[in-house]
Length: 75
Image (cartoon, rainbow, N blue to C red; front, side, top):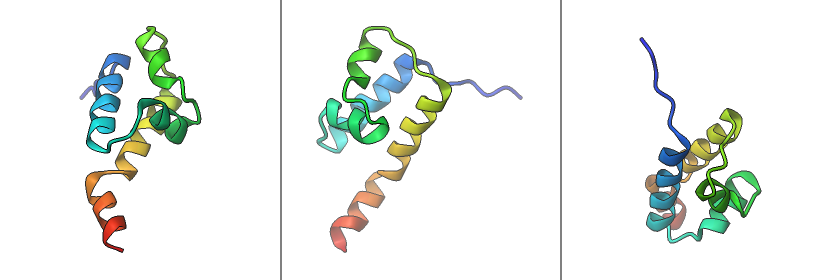
């Protein structure tokens, strides 16, 4: 059973949707997720992610899922 990895374009799309949902600027996302405010600009310039960086980005988005945000607001 093979697992398909997300492409850089897929991750860029997920980042943009995440930022829209969370009212977060793209540069803030890059800074908070991997410490690089130019993350999205680099992806748009066809630069590729390492697997380690892609995993950090996916983990950041998972940790900031809407349910987690709602729980923080309620506390």
